[in-house]
Image 1 (spheres, rainbow, N blue to C red):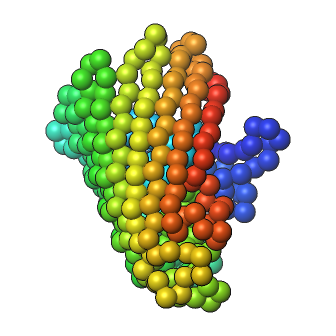
Image 2: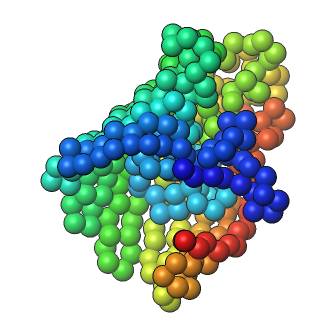
Length: 295
């Protein structure tokens, strides 16, 4: 069970209605045959929790949104009422499946809940690693078209540095880059947004050991189109793009304590710069310093 809270004031966050153990709450059993688990946890591309297999990125979703994969890719949220299945490894290959009976809750009967489906696999052979993920949201709560998202990632460790790459195609997505922001804000009141958005996203990054720590450099870009053009707000264009670049450095003070710093710059164009999307926070810069300790 994992609890999220704000360090500055102790307020619970990152959960449905700020609930307890909101990051992850899971019970499962595993063995040589694989594993099966139930509860609340991140989807396959979430980059959080026990069952994410997102790869192909040095920076991942660490530091702030601008500069990491969240600023260009559409990543899975944490899902409630979920079941996860994992296979044993076969010659470096492992398969994963996640299903959620209610992404946010399961207050309605099964046919009316919004469901999440995820299938994926990982492969490793020496210094090479790769992952492939298919995710589908049936969007029952909005009667929107099914969202299908395909994500690929790979990396290779050359010894003196590791090179990473990732690609994603999203079709009829009801989320946009940046904290899974809703499309509803970009459309007129009661306007149709059920076709969602289609987009392509790419990321390239590198990590290298320097002076006892690890340095990271990452860039990403996304290009998309809102499919319900006729119902968009007046200042919103149907096409959008976003790019960002981030750099960071992490240094282990001890086996259990890590200090880190990072900085990033990004810019969002067209639809993602409209007044309706100003809360997406994908344009600008940020800087972060911090410390992590493993108990």
